[in-house]
Picture 1 (cartoon, helix red, strand yellow):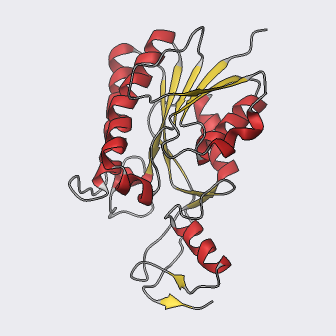
Picture 2 (cartoon, one colour):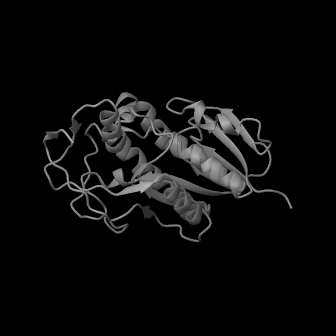
Length: 255
């Protein structure tokens, strides 16, 4: 029996590399496409030499050519940390718009199922906690974070357009605060920031006004949820995170 082929864009990134691992474990052939703008080749070094794994260095905002049959496409290409997308605003917007368009074109051509990596950031500065899929958010499209938020919101919109108009099989996952191995210490998000400060013996910077919440999800749990969503019949967005409320304060403290 022929193994299914899965394409993972952004496959050398934090989440993408873990997805490559999982898909290989599930018996897929994996084609990892990444331009290494924010990805790290070390994340997939252990896969080089695996006959079922192929790495292609390519910018997916340009035409994507993949020979042969493709069964699944998981679109994870995008700067994701605040440090990255604030330094790379135009690239972030392009990969969320042009890149998603190119990926959907490939899915349409290959009759493949496509899963879009979206984000809790599409809710902006939400007024509802925890966020449900039915909540539309409270967004600022012209603020500094708008480059990431709006790229993902557009990605969801064009994904649903391809689903409804062209009949492309699509899935959308909204990812919350995920952590685990292969995260960069200078990622800019709360857990690597706190861990980095703790390792350096520095005071921990805690943000917010004492009421801010986070939904933390370990990477293996997220990947399991993503794989289950990929194999499901659910075409509408699905949030993957948790509902544990963690309170923060404005102060700098020594723990």
